[in-house]
Length: 109
Image (cartoon, rainbow, N blue to C red; front, side):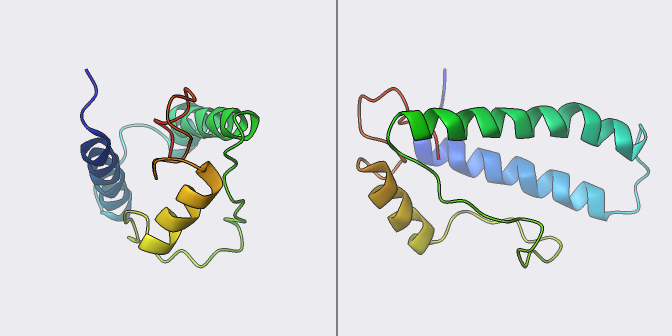
């Protein structure tokens, strides 16, 4: 059973911070880096794209970002800012979770 929204967001960011710290550490990987990016990370990115598509179809698009050009220093994992949350509420036209309540998309950031 899913946790309340805020707890799930915190759990996601904690897991992401743990992965980021591990990748930044001197601990050797148990598999070649290419396998990580071609497997679980590529799979996660595929699902992010699917969720973005569903949000667009549901009338609650996600603002695009060019992550190749974005200033993203290492070990910079954090929860969305209040500005980003406000944009989500505006784009989502709903409850602040990103979509109109009852739209079937209210679990998506």
